[in-house]
Image 1 (cartoon, rainbow, N blue to C red):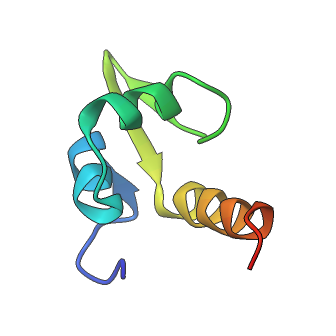
Image 2: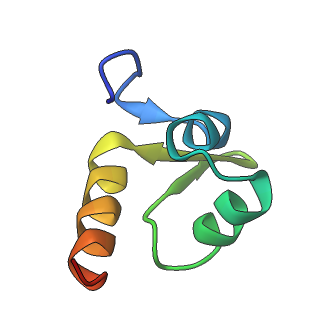
Length: 63
């Protein structure tokens, strides 16, 4: 899933990966749900943070 992406992701890459719109991504980035950091005004997300977020969401949802 992440083979074609760098270790640090941009919000646009999250949009591609997760298939959701920009508003949802920025809502996640401005909450504590998805760990991110800023370089200047630009959000960045590590692949590990994204993997942890996805695993957490999978555990929360009933199978």
